[in-house]
Image 1 (spheres, rainbow, N blue to C red):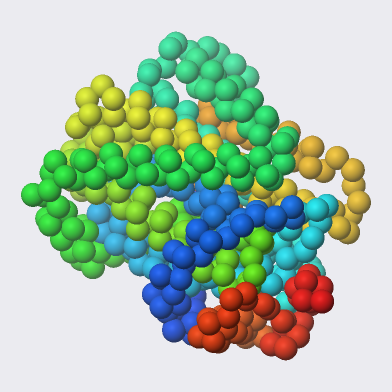
Image 2 (spheres, rainbow, N blue to C red):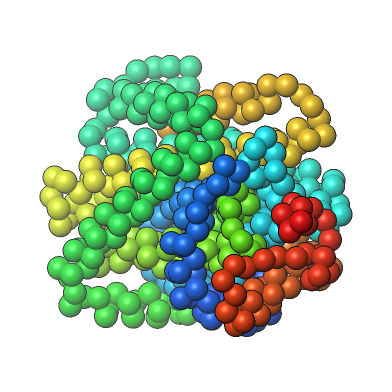
Length: 492
């Protein structure tokens, strides 16, 4: 099974996808005149100014939902894997893909806002919706929707819950093992899996508003606590910080693991973590209540910064500054060995060891708790995304019970991921991310060359901002944007 998963990953995550992610980010950065830099202050202002409505959640809630999808296992275990397989230079390429990816996040999230729909008293949207309406290719939209339901309903939740299971076992021990139909499993993982599934069921059966309310409280609090711990560790080793920074920069261009490994793992884990271009963020963006589509696009671009430049960097500096890592490129010997060879690279172990080296007796449990909240809220975001695509399919195929079936599947996948081996879980997750990224990035590039709706929205927003309007409006017909039915109705 692992060999088959790795074979598929080799095809999906070929250098072509690496360069597509970086090239698309650079292309949109240039075409929007680096919107991620020019509108930085506006992004921050918009974060705090939006309000929810009966149909839509606020900009901040949408940010929290999408951040709950972005800030997860990738920020703790994913960064460790990038360093372990690609060397310290992989961190630099995570920064690059985040900076360039912020413009991609703006494009895809603005598209989601322009082409969103009202369904059952709530806003829904995402790549399947904008591919159908802007590209006019329903078969391609269906392909994305089905791939997303499989990725977010089955593959990706396994990675998140696996990270929780590994962290709990690392922090509190196995508590003994038992033989099951799934093989030998520790009691710690069984209890953890059961607890996660029960809590997950309680929240997802409560609807999108319950998901938004839960994540807007948990995500900012946990991210802030995590960054504060990282700042304490960095502060205690402040004399080593310049050396670590130079190690990252130097290794990015003449790395010990080869440039290809650093770029490949940096981009792969960068996309996994910040999700720019993957097509997950637009689902939360579409659910927001805003005056103008560009506003939510800017907010979502800011979330990429929070994810990678803050949370991922915090993890990377903790690991590198304490030396709690090995570098072991796939198929090669250890290039750096600071910790035991038995330590799993595709796990939160490096991060737990880094925090434990400063906060003895507290570090491992703290990372286990942080990872629980990060990963659990990510699973909630995945459910929300998968549900949006089930609703998209339900518009055509009126099959009863589809959402209930999705809930049962994601709960089963979450349980399975918690108790199974990390390598298979991460491999399945990478397949899910890669498939969605291929389909979404090609889609938004085709839409760009067909009509440039996201750029038209940005220019319109800039003009209104310069004019100092008190209330922004969006008239798609005036801008030559077709099929933005909800906004046309709103204007009337």
